[in-house]
Length: 345
Image 1 (spheres, rainbow, N blue to C red):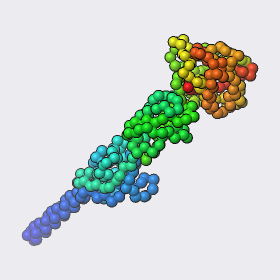
Image 2: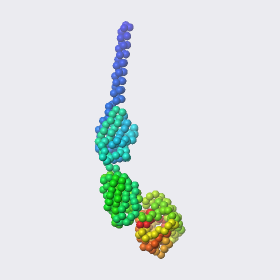
Image 3: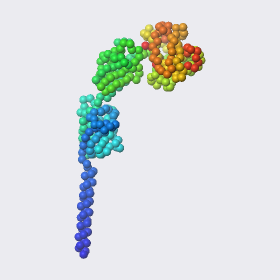
Image 4: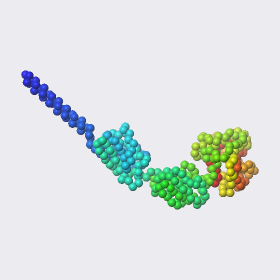
């Protein structure tokens, strides 16, 4: 009887050992699923397979054995990995902004704990970026140099809706001739990667106000409340001048205390004006150097920006610039306007 019990016990122990070995082997196999297998790349917005994409955009890499992914590279540049966006069958990842796109192997490389795999994926040319242009204003036919990034394959340069003649171009610099008839315009650069628009408008030879008064210009006026850096209504940049006329025939005023500004090389005063909502269209008068008999009257339209170019001969043909006044010219004490981008062209 004891011998039978001993044999039965031995059989049970042997069976448990076999189960343990099988279980251990099974676990070991589950822990090592094998190298990654990449099947396709798809868009995030819809399940549409793609083999090309753009920097800073998100895509899903579809495949097998991806759960232990430790690195994803686009043409050798590693992307940021969010562990919550990785499963055994897909990886959601953003193409790095600095991933190279020109003359590259055009590959995505996925590295897991158990191997590495590649898939074809071409990064398209990124959109151009304009950093600066110089000079800020110039005449017809003058050369303007535009600096920035990714100007490769330049298609055209526009000053608003007018195309400019390109003199030369590289990946980081473009030289163009100013088209005829341009007083003020934003510069647009077109490439296969997209369109870039300059942050500032081209068009001044001398700036009086651009978010703030230029150096040596003083603040004055009478019968009004002037906010020199208002963010309420802005034509361009961060601020404009808000003028609240509180008395009839009152005036906004700024003057120059620096070295003489000779106007022989300038043709006009340029500024942008906006009539406050609810105030209606209002008449004002631009006066230069106190010449009120030779001032220029114009209407400020309610609720819209107007870009005005006022020839110097319309304000008395002054030889120098010492003072600018914008006077309320209807005898209305409640007029409110905004002024931005004052300068000479």
